[in-house]
Length: 409
Image (cartoon, rainbow, N blue to C red; front, side, top):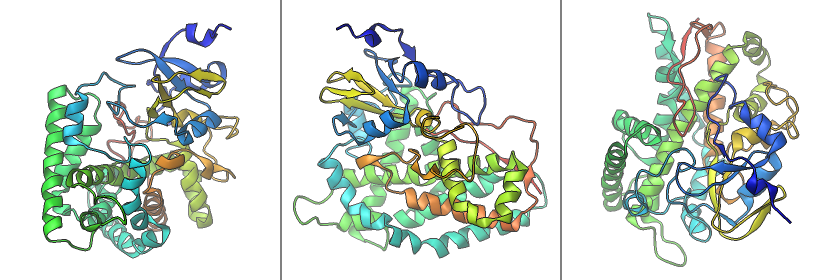
């Protein structure tokens, strides 16, 4: 029987947003007409784009889809560096390994990101937020950019303390992080940024191996598994890089997008202030509404499998598109409406699913909850400085978010 899907037109990954609050419109059509569509890649043969919730969720949990791939962003741009160059600056990490190697790398981190451990961080996060809000309240000039004044520094302070990275270095690693996530970088620029980040973190890890402190990087240098060798220094560097980037960049963008979305509808802002019990569900709904890993996750089939009725052959690439899945009306009725009362918001896929589900998700939730709660209390009249001006966004970066969020009150 002829596979008509393989002869259907090949689409490029939709990336142009009509509205900064929504994924590209094309995903709605693909979910209906071609839920597993032929996808053109910037390099190599075509693969597949999966957009329905049930199919994406199943794919994220299917170990026949491998996380091993030569380049993290090959569904968006051609590979700028070779696999050997990639390995030189980033050895095995949680994003690019499969079990059992993935399990070996993840195991030492589980206790550090448990609910119990994260709860112990609450007083410290509250202190950081209070300090930033005090500084904002004392600022004579308005508008104030909440990205620079609140959304970025708080997660940066938290992840620095957790990992044992000097916050005094935040300008340096935040610049490098932005460069590593920017898809407009040239090959030479990308290699330079990777080398600089690797060099910075390796020197830090080597120092902690000699003189450990009470932080996560030190814990990893001292970890001795019951069987097998300890983590290699470059493995710790790779894990540190992943946690550093994910720990501040994703949280900062989610915080700023969440605040922007609520302020665009003052009734939502005032409704949350009037009923703080809605905040927990509001966070889940905002996470569903804004899936900031905007180009989905890339997998490679290591065995034949069927997704959404479509046969995938070994070696074919598959993009599991969480932003499209989180707007699937079959799972979330009226999905393009932000509904703070939505009963199943927590079933979103913004933190992934299966063995690769984000290990730091509870920390991210706690940061958003504390910032929102305190911001609503301290600045009840907070508003956008100019609601008529489209927000400045990171359109061509791995992580979607805001460049700035000017507010007044």
